[in-house]
Length: 110
Image (spheres, rainbow, N blue to C red):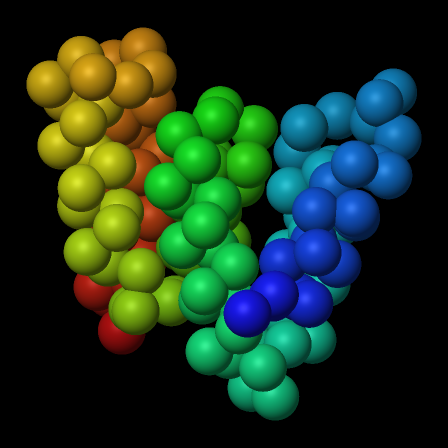
């Protein structure tokens, strides 16, 4: 089954101006995601799981940011696996553990 929301988010990321900062991009995508938090939560979680499993710096870390800021508890297991992979040196540089831990703490703070 095709996830229409995943396609929309992929298109938004691809279309975001290159000259903008990463922080602006994260904020922009978080604003889009917020519109779907209630009406299409399951599809949103599925889309973000796809990004987390990509293990690609840009989309995976954007999904980490969204999961934390939007308090998506459903993504806790994927974030914990990603953190373990980072800490074991399987993916990304060690400093990527910091934003993942931050996202996990935001999720668990509710």
